[in-house]
Length: 27
Image 1: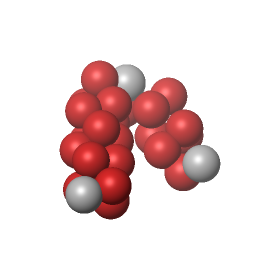
Image 2 (image 1 turned 180 degrees about the vertical axis):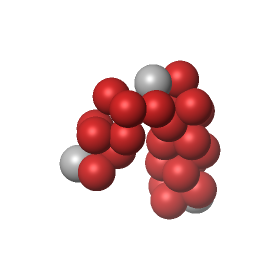
Image 3 (image 1 turned 120 degrees about the vertical axis):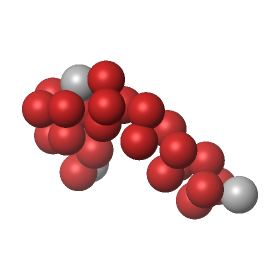
């Protein structure tokens, strides 16, 4: 999972972005 790395480095910012990306992908 690429987001896993970003989540570690970005923390909250990456987390929010990850959620948005996931939502768009599902939708």
